[in-house]
Length: 429
Image (cartoon, rainbow, N blue to C red; front, side, top):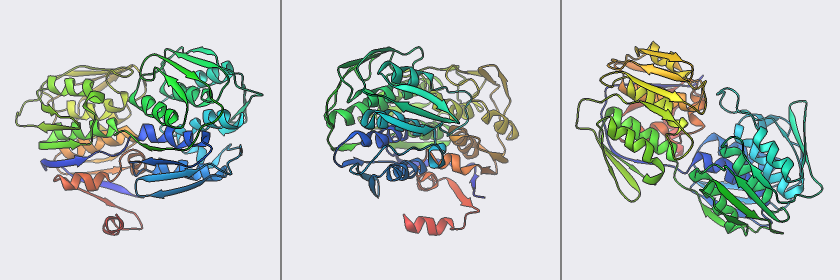
């Protein structure tokens, strides 16, 4: 079993390049199903989800070619092959195949998706949207069956703000007859990214990035070339690492506007941050980090995906902090692992009370999900001694070339336990 090792106590200095957005990539790749000719997506992150989604496109008859960070998808030959299990179970974002295949073929069979176990994340809002457009939706033996004679535009109000449901309804509505309006839509940058791809393909979408999105259905969508936005969660994770143990670290390929809530909280903690057009510089000359309270909210609020790594940073604040997660109440599994390293954290309901002033010690810990893994990397960089992290496959789902990027700025981080040595892996890249 692969493990990640981090020797703490090394200061970071230099530049870290941010990859393309994972949360965009996992929606953009299924969206290519809707086109009638090849689609090319540039600046994709080197993460396992991209490979799994590409393989799923091939399972339904498409042709994919992944070269470096560029994926070309030829949808010619695709058909509505049922995907009840197998790869579709490996990641939650496979549910975007529902909207894309329903939009293209008027039917789909998709296994209930997997991914990180963060407690109940129902897809009832997705189903509500599909049914409003005219689809019949049934759940049989762990798979969702979708069927429509035709899709007709509708007014859809989301009871809960949901990124997944907003994107899935956009995909299904792009070729529906008439106008679809999504009210209480999510506003995340990744939604704008998907809308941009669809618009470049010939879709008519207005209001992406606001809480009301209108989609005028069109008869056909054509291929195009699209460059994905930078990953704001990866950027935020490295900003937190720089705040924890950095001297002067520049995080490059960033849209600072996407990270305003994190930037304000880091400044509140006494961290020096300079924002530029497409980068952020963190200069950590001050010694004392102030405690802050954080509450996760839908975008543009503080991202739930940054709550876990930020919790690690707060363990060394000079006083108690409270972190409340209003999005995923069970997203505190990382706190047990941080306690193994010497953190004083008490979880009550949707909140974690972090006592602060901890001197973390290296320990053997386990990543239970993607962002918990990032939290343990932050903690490992801060801790005295060596931290051994298992569950590395979770981290690989969201952070491309993690060790390479951190070693470049001075971290002592390595991987052990794989058939291929770390050295051989580096030579491949």
